[in-house]
Amino acid sequence: MKLLVLCTASIFIITALILRAYCKVKHRRDRKLMEYVRASNLYLQLYEIMNNIGNFAVDEIIIENSGVRATSVYPAHKLFDYSFKQNGNSCRNKELARIVALLLAMDFSLLSDPSIYQLRRYRIYRMNGKKEYGFRYTLRRHYKDEIFSYRQQMHKSASLLIR
Image 1 (cartoon, rainbow, N blue to C red):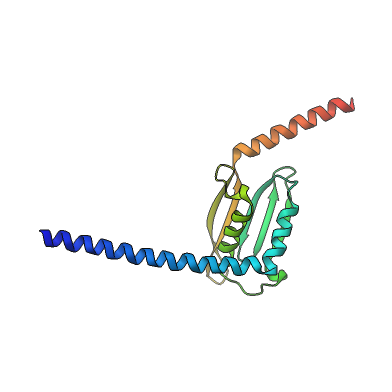
Image 2 (cartoon, rainbow, N blue to C red):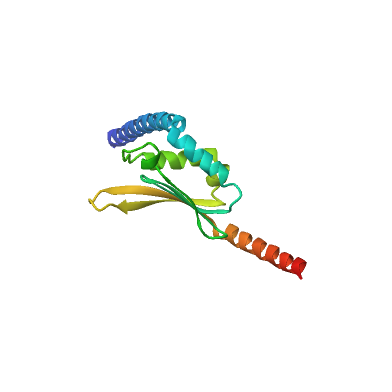
C-alpha cells in the first residue's frame, strides 16, 4: 500500500516538474516573440494608430491574423482597420494575433483591466478548412451605459444653450 502511494506521489511530482519546465520554455518563447513584434514597424505603426484614437470611446478591438479593427461606442463607426498584409506582413502567422493582443494589453492599461474590457478568444474557420483564432476586447456594458448617459446630458445642456 505504501509503495502504491509512493509511486503515485512520484508520478504527480514528475508530471508537475515536466509541466513547469514546459510552461517556462513557452513563456520564454512568448517573451522573445513579443520583443520581436514590439520592435517591428508593423507594431510601431499600430501603436501610433492606437495612441491617436484616445479621444474616442473604443467599443471593440478585434485582432485576427489578417489585422486589427476598432469600433467606437458613440458615434458608432469603425475607427480604423489595420491590415497586417498591407503594412509589411505578407505571411499569415497563427501566433501573431495572440502576441499583438498581449502587447496591446501591456501597452494600454485600460485593455488589461478586466472590469473595463473583456478579452475573448474565438475560432475562425477559413474557406480552406483551416482553423485560426481571433481575439476581441469588448467594452463592458456598464461603461457603455455611462458613456451614453454622459452624451445625453451633453446634448441636453447643449440644446438648452442654443435656445
